[in-house]
Every structure is written in C-alpha cells, then in structure tokens.
Length: 94
Image (cartoon, rainbow, N blue to C red):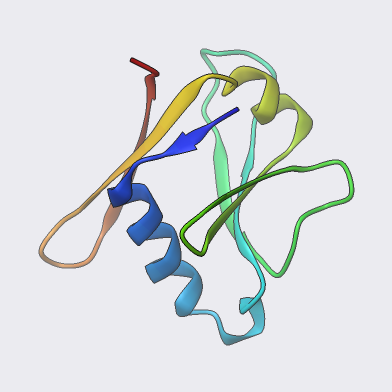
C-alpha cells in the first residue's frame, strides 16, 4: 500500500484545508493503468466506493483501482516551495 512521507502528509492536509466542502475529503489519485503514466490529482469530498484509502496523521489520499495497483509499495513525497506550490513525487519504498 502507498505510504506518505511527513512532507506529503503536510501537503495533503494543507491542500484539503483550502476546500471547506472537503473537510472529510482528501486528495484523489487516478492512474492510467501503467507505471509510465502520469497521475491525475484532485481534491474530493470523499472516496469513490472502489477507492483504496490511505490515511496518515489526518491526511487522506484516495486511490482509484489503477493507481492503487501501480502505487502499491511506493512512497508519496512532496516538496513545497516558498511560494506555496506543491510538487508531488512517487518513489520506491526503501
């Protein structure tokens, strides 16, 4: 299952806090079914019925079935620049 770094946890909580309608929501990751594909991230108010849910310290990430398969045993990291922009990266678990 996907794990979140402390930075990714902070980024997800910061992003979702900006959406009052998504208080119980999180970031949803959708994949195209292959490791080489790019993922789509969106803020949603809750998971779809088939989504895998990853929670860490109040941060919630929902993975569609394709993303869950591709991101199994991966780590979601994030970098936040001084202007507040977030860049997510997926790495292999150590």
